[in-house]
Length: 333
Ligand code: AHR
Image (cartoon, rainbow, N blue to C red; front, side, top):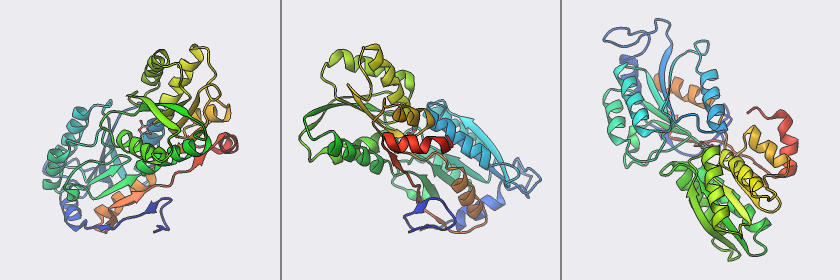
């Protein structure tokens, strides 16, 4: 179902937000500066955002989108924290936002599980939680009001389909650089890719390890793959940064990335698109990091007591080498 005033596509039903909205309005909103709440006196919406970290170019673009959108001019008082890819830091940040009695909490969970207790605390405090980018694995979906982000299973599936159709016409060996262990994008992209190649007996994943979504760890893991296997045809990296690390390892081993060893990734940040246009990557499925505008709109609706979509799936494109050359001049991130 297309949502006219969003650049994204909403696919799921409406969330009941009245309870949260009531709680939000009577707690940390700017009109209420008592009770220890950090009222800002400007009728701004106070929003606490607990970011995963700064592990990738994608994350940098995502942080910029949030900070550029949730401004005082746009009606927000943003409190931002960087968890350095540690769940305990994110939980601590969320607890601090609860203690500050903010109007809304938003976060991108570093891993899928282990959130129920802190989300229950937010709910008990009447503070609505909006998930951005990554999902939580919880039985109780009343612990958050909305989840805005890509369909990671679909992303992995699209990469797998491309590999199967374009490279899997003969027997190929694939190595996989997984994202952060236990994170939604690592779990879902793996699942989608495996599902897409399942019917093609030419495509074999011969090794798979985490590179934690960083360029440095992607390089180190790829060095290990190259030492362990002399028959690698394709690298499937769960994000551009690990693919860029793989380029360094492949070149150091005297091989040509994109030719001797093909590289397919997910994200579509500028460095990744440049590698694709230069022939060092072979295919990228985009993961759109520009979630700030959707988050701002949902947060305003929630605080106003309006209904919001429980799941908002953002639109992702895909690029081959020619597509990257055409798209690069206008790439925002
Ligand atoms: O959750 C989105 C993923 O996290 C991006 O693909 C990756 O680059 C980031 O670290």
